Amino acid sequence: MLIYMVQQGDSLGKIAARYGITAYQIIEQNQLKNPDLLYVGQRLQIPSRRPAAVPPQHQPPRPQPAEAPPPAPQPLTSTPLAPTLSSKKDCCK
Image 1: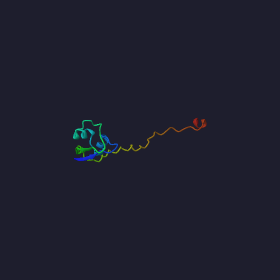
Image 2 (image 1 turned 90 degrees about the vertical axis):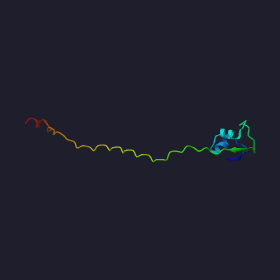
Image 3 (image 1 turned 180 degrees about the horizontal axis):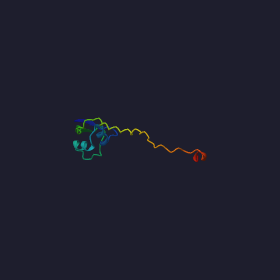
Image 4 (image 1 turned 135 degrees about the vertical axis):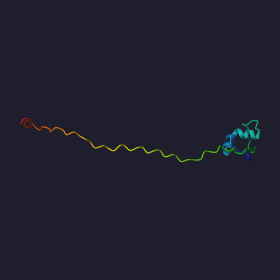
């Protein structure tokens, strides 16, 4: 635990944020009857930061399966076309 001396412009919220705790923790620790009344030079006991839950170990993202490439184009098969007629003369021999 440490002792903090209130400075001009301080508030419980600012002090709490500075130490990573809540204003309520400071109020409880110091048994403040009126938490809105702070004065310059006032000594406040700052409780130890409560240990946070241990975060899970970082795991790299799992690789996503690669998107399957589109199927290769298949060769076109065609039915032979009937010969085309270029003129009426070729038609009726």
